[in-house]
Image 1 (tube, rainbow, N blue to C red):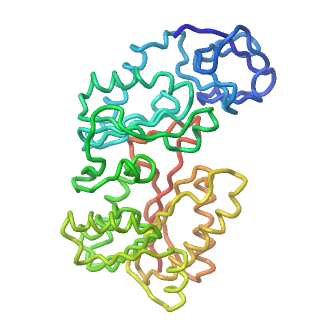
Image 2 (cartoon, one colour; image 1 turned 135 degrees about the horizontal axis):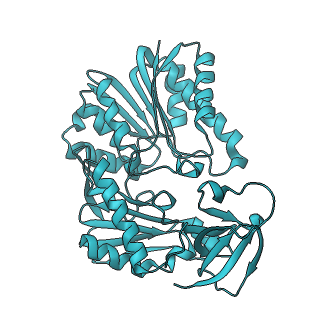
Length: 393
């Protein structure tokens, strides 16, 4: 696509794009020179006429421009092919099972608003902005050329697309295949529902963190709250736990978790319960129930800064209860997947919870997401996952 217009940023202040952030907001723009249609490619300049980058524009979105490149290069099929090839080479360096990974992680792979997950011979794609949705057919043809997948499924049933003026939809893009498929994580097979499961059907971002359970689960009684489809549960069981109690409010998630435990021949040591994890933690901690390992991996409690205070209270509540339920010398694994909950605030919440629980804690590990979910230091939004393991004395 040819450059259709030029965007000039306001004078004054340092714009985030100077540091490598790929987003430009409406409020940062001084004026636009030239005619364009939503989704067109534009160049971005400072008020001093310094070239910052080239990306796609959508005036309907508060993120009006998303930068694709800091070079004055053509945005065409070859451009996207090089980007996808580079992402694949990166995965092969760091991921032991690259056929099962987050292949394209949007901004952090320099293709803003594009997500592609690879599930062996199948792929799931999300195009979350107008500017990238326009190129969907091109991207699919590149995926077919490079990977020859048996099928590609679209999971564009996400509300953020409405902010871009796009409809929500999901379905087959290539092939016609069963949408409950097997994936591998750390050599362990799992079922994933790519049609109705959360996000794209499986969360690869905790891959390396789940491996860390092998240090603490041998002969342990484990509680896994917000267990979803049982990834932490199955890892804990395979790493030698003598009993794993797994809680999730979704009956569908619990059913899939049971299937995954059965698939790995650990169902006999797993107790699955469809229940509200908040209620369970409150009741069991009040009754004095304790475990050797407690895992808390809830969904995001906040998706905006406006609700951060309420989210902090939620994290404080579950961590307070979780810490109380860890036997002396045992371990708490606690996670947050909201980037609005930054690392220091999350750590402060856990420390505060330990104080109120009247327990002494020490940090074992504080990690972020797996390497197939790379992070741009200039874009804090790309670093969203917090995984903390503490020992509770």
